[in-house]
Length: 203
Length: 203
Image 1 (tube, one colour):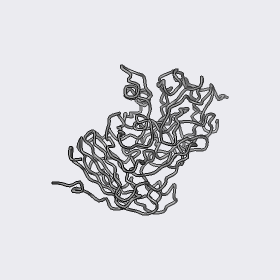
Image 2 (cartoon, chains in turn green, brown; image 1 turned 60 degrees about the vertical axis):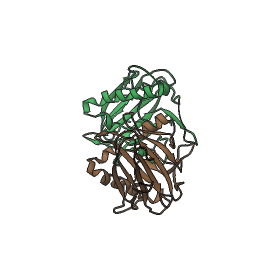
Image 3 (cartoon, rainbow over the protein chains, first blue to last red; image 1 turned 90 degrees about the vertical axis):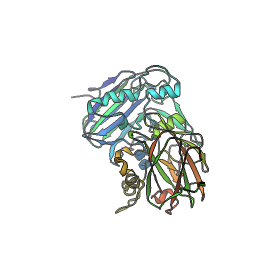
Image 4 (cartoon, rainbow over the protein chains, first blue to last red; image 1 turned 135 degrees about the vertical axis):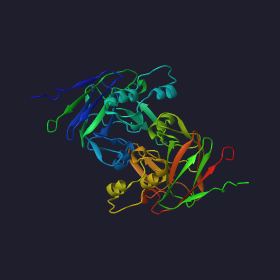
């Protein structure tokens, strides 16, 4: 019998992975070393006009911090994922994935910098996804505090080594997932991210 | 000589309008009666892959509440608008425009309900925009409070009769603007929205 760690895949630091998820399957994302962020984006398989929506999700959930029991919605108001387990309880759904332009604008970086957007695009390339189809990602383990005056602060993730979140697919999906490339999101170091796909009923 | 009210256009309650804005022109949006919301979305003229991005804007601004001096960014990290005047100081950039599905899911509405999404689509129709290209709108005068625990609450707008916001176009744009259709966003009544396009140098 396949144990829970049977199909674990490791995403190397500053890289990404793309995969299909069938309805009912569970995506388990694990932070193996702690304090690392993983950006997730998804499309309905075969219907890329249907994609993950921060704005719909925050509206329907009535909150910006999502955890166990909450649903991630598509841009056309269909449930895409349900969070069924969560060791951390803090993720971000406000910010777009880090990009070459972000490193230049916010950090005055010069030259190429690996980024979640580039890694998501590479991961989605076999599925024919264009850059403008990737909007705000669900930034797993990313800690973004919002002050009463609206100021936003990116802080080290609350995830400890081995912490996980589990998301059940509510439709057939094409997904991409990263091990984040932004120094500012993961307390200054680059680490891997692990994920598993648990077959329906095996979770 | 054209006075500031020369080209004022009124958007009827629960409807929308589409228009081009040249680089340097200023879009003035006025709440004629107070406590009304106006959803704004925009594409680069001739390049619809470049569109308004909540996630990029919040990341670059470092805050969720935007006002005078702040820039609204595109999904590919180019400045689209700069807010150059603002009587109100509270707008929302977290939530997607109200939609038929939203009225059904959040308010259990049955039958057709006018919505900002439908009105934006109608306004963008002459420009060939598809529904999935409209993501989170800049919701002018909309008041969405975020509690320390992340809970989101839609409250009556702070705008009083005659209050305005002015946004300068930083590139040639195709825009659509609504007079919001959601009872919950405008303190229970439906009102018009006025707008003017001020030519470069005339603002």
